[in-house]
Amino acid sequence: MATAAQVQTIADMSEAELAALAYLEAAGGDAQRALAFAVEDLLRAEGDLAVARRAISHGYVRAGRVDGQLVEARAE
Image (cartoon, rainbow, N blue to C red; front, top):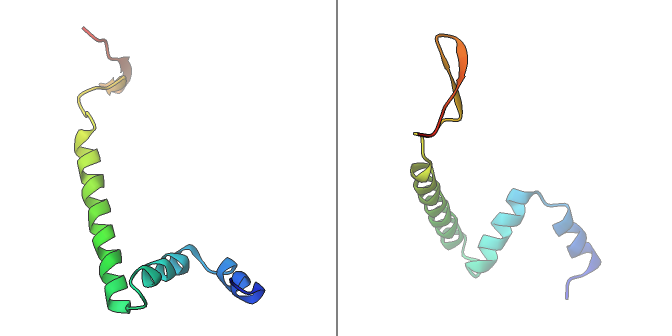
């Protein structure tokens, strides 16, 4: 069980420090392995974001400007 001082130390940590601590714990204290885990997760997240961006339809527009005037698109 954590002491009150340990709980306070963790409460005072930034989000980045907490993430680093979590990766270090998951890696069994091995800093290089923790960094490898973090980089792997970052690359996976970037890949997932790229897939999500490609899934967004850029062909549907609710409204736009033509010759400086606002026009509404119609579904036909």
